[in-house]
Every structure is written in structure tokens, then in C-alpha cells.
Image (cartoon, rainbow, N blue to C red; front, side, top):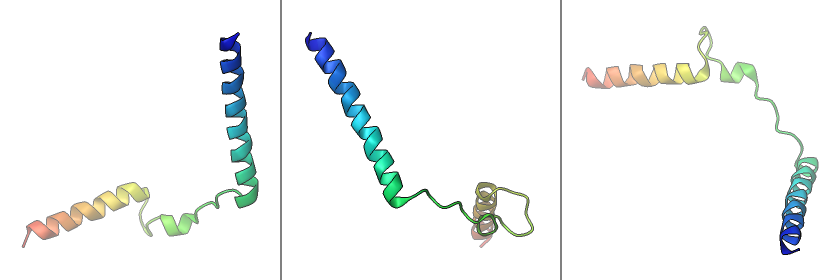
Amino acid sequence: MKDLIVILMTFGFFGLCVAYVALCDRIVGPDPDPDPESVAVPGSDATPVEAGAASVAAATRAGSAR
């Protein structure tokens, strides 16, 4: 009987958590989609992560040339 109570309390807790997240989502609203032009590097087909890695690599080469 105690097992059943624990299981019901666990399901109830997760149900409250789901309801809380849904309520917060209604209050705050969905996250805005990022502007694709502000994320992309002009003139490059690389993703922002690849472009960032390339700029770090270029800065490292420039720093080691000194």
C-alpha cells in the first residue's frame, strides 16, 4: 500500500511540474526565433560555430607570428 502512495505522489509531483512549466510558458511566451542574418557570417557558408572557430584559429596564428 505504501508503494502505491509513493507512486501516486511521484506522478502527482511530475504532473504539478508539467503544469507549472505550461503556466510559465503562457506567462512569458515562447522564445523568439533568432534573426538568421545576425547569426550568419556575411560572405561565408560556414555555420556560426565554424566561423567562430576559424576566427580563433586566425587570431592564434597572428599571435604566434609576433
